[in-house]
Structures are given as structure tokens and as C-alpha cells.
Image (cartoon, rainbow over all chains, first blue to last red):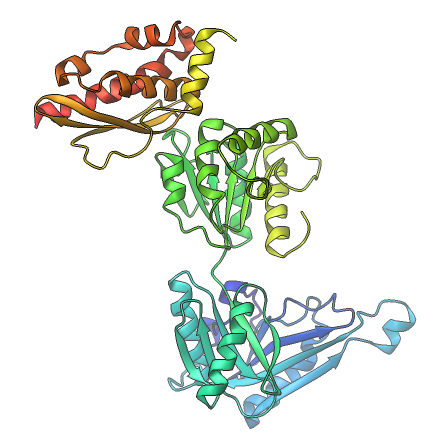
Length: 355
Length: 123
């Protein structure tokens, strides 16, 4: 039996280890209510093959997964779709105070990995195409009833259909807000649909190729984030120092940063600790829709940089976008500890938590 | 605040000739590899005279002040005269001499302009 970790950015794909199966069951976590602490992120998937192979999972501890696997085995043999509503309350666990609590809803679909007309595979291909363009896409499927698949990508590209042009248009409108938040269930024309969001990984633009940047790029790789190391100094920004970086760019930092599309999935992390880079980079970034701007330095130094920019005409609202001191206050001083605090803050901001 | 310091800060906060020069026909980029100062100096040369000079830089205050004063200073000069401008001219305009450790901050724009004009002359 194969069981592997499925990354969030690859969760729509059928794992290669299952590609030779004639049919597999794809279980998708579409909602979690109540306690919910044991559920994975909405949209989490588990693929179950006829051979017994399993990839991914829909709960952290696997308490629900066994029931999903049981249903998946039947689905692969019999076809159709299944919607499982599973209570996480367990009588015995409740008595000792160890119950998870809440209810999760899991939808199971049958997929033919070798069927070139399979609608889910076609939707996955449309998602792959969007991700290759560095754009998000949303797969829309009804929760109950016959399978239908519609894909709406960030650039307006569409694929598949829910059955009518009007329904597709309504789903596309609802997909816009999902595109920038998280996967969820939405009601369209009185019927429940799952909006499954797939977005490219976050990109960290790290200005300043010092030791904190080195730790940032290493930890970011584990978090499936892309890293672009930016510095004006060739001796610092080297592949030897940054083996985990996605990209290393040497030149005028403000021009390099200006060449990167600053959308919501990009975080700029200024760790040069040098105004010569900070000011020109901030002048560019503060009036873009970039998702996060953080700058290394004390409160006093952060205030001085803000004052300098305020005198140039930047507003308080614009200056409030700068997270400085950067990172959550974890109390660490070593470069890896500071890097961890910075990435914790980036994740908190991305997830809409106070940071 | 000394006059030298006031001049540096004035040019850093309100630099002359910062930005791209659309009609440039001479251009070079320079860097101080350890401190990380980066500058691009552009010039428009017509009939052997520097009609316009501008710069783009991610650099320290002294380097930006030097570039600001230099690009003002060379406007209207012949290419030969502009290429011969040295750090002494910048020191005079600064009304002071930077500490030895900061010499490269002043000379980076000077050397970059000289290289741009030299390459222009070789064409």
C-alpha cells in the first residue's frame, strides 16, 4: 500500500503511482463544521486505487479516512458518486474528553486515470494550464447529483460546463471571491456546489542576501514557497549560499523587484537592513497590490524609514502596509529563528490572521 | 549639521537628474561589490557635447549626492571635459571631503559616467 503526502499545490493531480489504475476514487473534503480541529484544509484530497493504494488524506489523524476508504472501494467497483457526512463525535472518546467534535463532509468521485475523456482529468488539465501561467483557478462541481465540472481561471479562461450557460456564468461570478480566499461550498441557483481553489505557490521576494535570507529560502522550500533572492552584490547572492532558492537575481534591487508582478500571492521581505535598498524598493512596492511587505529593523528604524517616505508623499495608510519590526514576536535572535518568525507572519497575513 | 552633511542630505532627498533618460546614447552601470551600491548613468551626447545626463541608483546618500551633482555639473561640457571630471570636483561641490572609507561612494558615479562616455567614443 502506498501512502504519501500530497502537497496543496499538487492536490488536484492524480498521483503518478496511481496513473496505471483503471479507476480510482477521489475523495474531497468539502466542508467541516463544529470542532473541525482534526480536519485538513477544505479541499484536501485522498485518492484510493483499486489495488488498495492510497495517496493523501482528508483528516489530520486519519480517524475519518478509514470510512472514506471503505466507501471509496465500493465506488471504484460500482461507479457513481458518494457524499459522506461523517460525525467526528465518538461515544467512547467523548467519555474521556478526547473527541474531535464536529462533522465533515466528503465527496467521492470516480476517476479513470487512463480515460482521456474523464471530466475530472480535463478539469485538472485546465488547472495545470492556469498554474503554469501563474494564475489561480477554481474547479466547480455539484455536491449532490450527477457529476458536472466547470473551471474558471483567474484570467477569465473557462473549461467544462455545469449544464447551462447561465449556470456557468453564475458559478464564474461566485468563483471570483473564492479565487482570492479559500475553497468552500457555495449555493448557486438553490443548489450546493463545491468551489475548489487551486493557486500557485506563494513567492517570496527576499531583498538582501545575508544569513536571514539563507534561512528563509531553506524553510520556505519546506513550505512550498518559491523564493527569489535579490541583491546588488554578486558575492552574496550565489547559488552556493542559496541552494534552495528558486531564483537568484543580482542587479539594482528596485528594478528587479519592479520586474516581478506584485500580486496578492507575492510577499516582499526586506532583510538587507540598508536604506539604500529599502527606500527605492518600498517606493515601488507601497503602491502595488503585493500581499505582504516586511522590513527587518527596530521600531525606531522602521519609524525613520516611514518618516522619510512620508516626507516624499506616501500616506499613513500606505506606510501602514510595512510590517516592521518584521515577523511574529517569537523572541529568537539567531538567523533561522528570525526567518521562522518572518515566515510565520507571512502565513498569518496570507490566512487573514492578525499579525 | 555641517555644510557638507547638509549638502549630502539635500541631494539625497531631492536628487537632480534621477530617473531614466529616454534619448540616451551613452550608458553604463557600476557597482561597489561589497557595500552593494548600484548605479546606472546615462547621457545624451550630441555634436561632442553632453546635452543631458541622468542616473538611476540603489545607493547610499553620498553616492546619490555625488551622482546628482555630477550629472548637473557635466551638462553642456564636451565629452572629453566631462570624462575628465574627477572626485576633486565633487569634493568642492560637497564643500568637504568624505572619510577615506567612503571614497568609493563618491567615485562610483564618476567612474561609471567616464566608462559610459569612453564606450560612446569608441563606437
